[in-house]
Length: 188
View 1: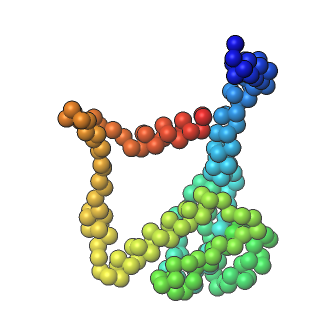
View 2: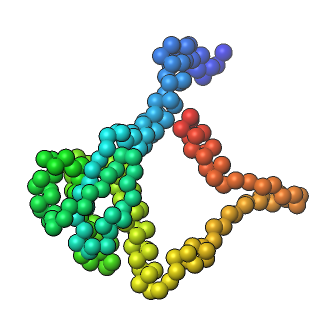
View 3: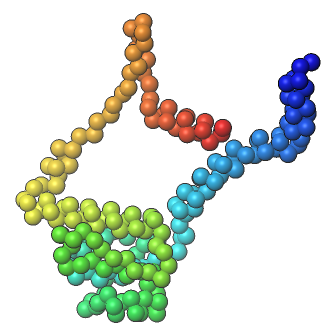
C-alpha cells in the first residue's frame, strides 16, 4: 500500500470513527441554522402584555387616527407636552410616548420614547400607520382621490421560463431556487 493510502487510512480510523466526529457532523449544521434563525425568531417574539402609548400630537392630524391592536393601545393626553409625558411615563403606566411634531408633513420623523427598547413589531405598526395617514393627507392636499390611486396601482407577477438549447421551455421559480440555496448552504 502506498504511503498516501496508509496516511488516509490512519486519519480515517483515528478521526472519522470517533463518536464526536459523527455527532458533530449531524449536529453542526443544526447548530449553524439555529445560530441564524434564533435571533430573527426572538426579534419577532412579542409578549402579550397590553402596551399603552401616549401620543403627543403637535400637528393635530393624528388624534384617534392610529389603529389599535390587541396589544397596542393609544391614548391622546389633552394639553400635554413631551417632557411632561416622559416625566410621568412610569406613574401613568405608559409603555412609551410617541411625539408627532407640528411639521410632520415635511419632517417625516417622529420620536418614540420608552424606558425599554420598543420591539420591532411596535415600531413597524406605528411607522406603517403614520405613513399611510400621511399619504392620505398628502393626496387630499393635492385633491387626488385615494380610491382612484388604489385602482391605478398594478401588481405584476413575473413568471420565469428557461429556454433549453433544444428549444423547449421550462418554467422556473427564482424565489424557490433562492430558498433551496439558502437551506442547502445552511445544511452544508
